[in-house]
Length: 284
Image 1: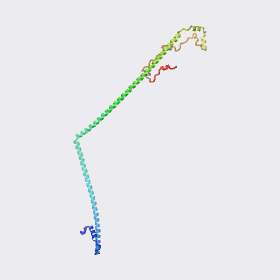
Image 2: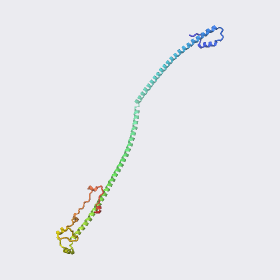
Image 3: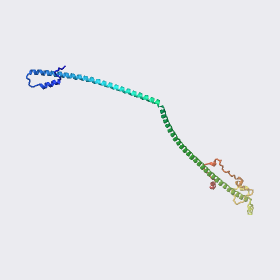
């Protein structure tokens, strides 16, 4: 414990430095006082160090205590906030439940409005699709009409081509008939001329010449290889045969082909018909 005379260690040091005089009348008293002051200084210094350590320990304890208190306070605040949040959440859920129980009519009305809007949008989409479908049907009908017109035009062109071919065949057939009739008339005139030449009697000059010609035996003529002149009269007993094709010039030997009919297969042949008129004009 400190003496009541000495209030503070710093005051003791200041008192000693202030009242030390260089000239001391008594040297023994001065030495004792210096030793005592030195001892007092050491004691004060040790006491100060001890106090500092004690205060540091107390400060450390206080800091730890303050930290613990702060942590405890923060945890309490967090718990209080969590409780408040739970209360608010429960109140909100309760209010929602109460609102759903009390406002069912409004909810159904909102749902009906949204459903009507969806139905209206679907109806508009359906109308748009119907318009597109009608447009596509019109296009298809126009395409079918064009195709039918093309088919009709093709049929008409085919019929026209068939008529042209039929006319060509008929013209060629008429040409053949006219040529055959001309040939018949020529053959008929030639047959009449030959028949008249047969029925005409021999001239007297030829008869006299025949009487003056020496008679030659038929066997000698057959054995002789020398040909007789054309102007020589025919041998007696030798009968001239008529021409081999004379009978073909009669009217009964000619047969006329029947005209082609549309039911024949060759009537609709795609190849160009060969006109026999051109064959008659070719040289033999």
